[in-house]
Image (cartoon, rainbow, N blue to C red):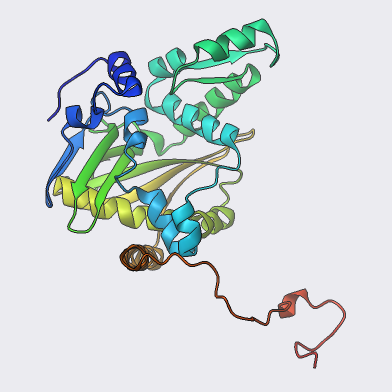
Length: 309
């Protein structure tokens, strides 16, 4: 489906504008076309460079934010946290690449050693303080020691970091699965596994994260695209979770039926809102009217009545 090009050469050519690298990959160009790419043919850098292809982050924004916020895009509040998460994913997927692209140092920020590391750092590489290395390996080892790890993470049918594209009637859409494997109950179906790092993997707290971070919308979107591209149904979507601080508690979660239905409904609404706003060129924020607000009854400390007329 694609021509293999040395990554360094292709990145350089794209930087200087000699070629459009997307033409090398032969992405779908007509409605109904799909494409599946292995990690060697679709690097993480290349996948995220495809801005005209919509991923789950876009739909989570359009489901939960105003059109004005959604159009503006994601605000990166802490790049270091994102980089640590990316490095951890790389460690789980390919330790060899992790060692080649993630560097740890005790050097100070203004030292010559740090300056040299930063000057030679390439896209997709990371530089961290030395003490983080032990933490990342501790998180990995804790996750891999979970008794469900062999079942979901190390099965012989596992596919890591495969990418799927579909040119739908209304949208060009993409997903990149952390891992997928053949179904447990039905070998004609597949299971998708997504890694999550979290401050807490306590069931109640992680359930709150599902709502706050739109994980249920991600699940609905991934299942829809995966089934359309591969022609195989998804038996289950599993979150493999690990905490970011010792003792690195781990948990494996799947969503109940009600939450899956809510995710599908939110995805439908996100696509409706996206289409309407782009068709009308109307990206409004909050309602431009005088709105009465107040404390909830739970926040009233000095009065007994909700009505304070």
